[in-house]
Length: 215
Ligand code: ADP
Image (cartoon, rainbow, N blue to C red; front, side, top):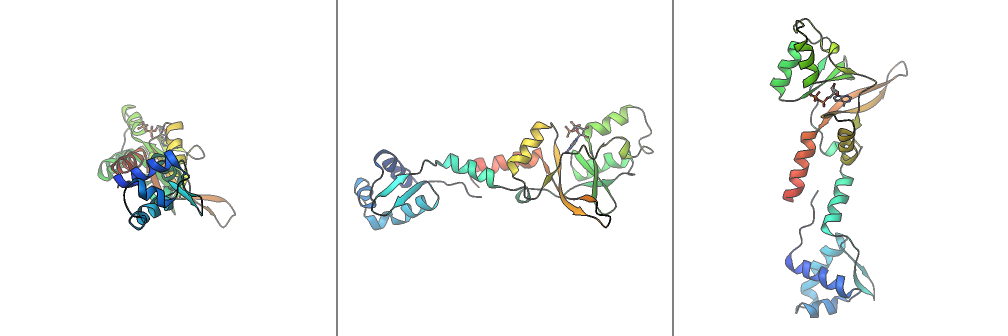
């Protein structure tokens, strides 16, 4: 994932081609007072990155892709598997007290609740845990499944889904995290969702910062 950073000379070439394209390499070289050979690596970078197109005997022309639109393409190409974090999971019978301790220890805001084998059962958020706690329950006795949102109401994502779609789900459903799952058909022919990761608003924010820094 490397958004294109153009050198001043490459920017100049793009400007010339935008203004005068289609234009031959020879003429571009003349405009910038350099030889065709000197420009060759720059032209190669610009055509390979899709900013310029080249046609034999016609020359170079602007393909309409700015660094910004290449960045958009990059975002749309990225998959959940490129960004996901490890899932932080608890079992249904875990107490609310232990779930709260896990939030602190693992430094997360959402826990994924799984059955034996790591299959998705539900999700429990900070506020879910606060709600049962202020209900004056004995949080050491109450299991987390009393507080969680459960299947089939869980919004999920998969390894090959685009980051863009996963981020759109976070916004649309107003949740902080999505379990990343792999679909498995068990011995009884039933579909199960194995939890293999999580995507959070923090992952997306991190990506935004990295793209902005041109890493
Ligand atoms: P908080 O409740 O701490 O603000 P969220 O906004 O993530 O955190 O959660 C809001 C509600 O949505 C909670 O009741 C939580 O159980 C539920 N929830 C969280 N993540 C999901 C998800 N991926 N799918 C369905 N429900 C979710």
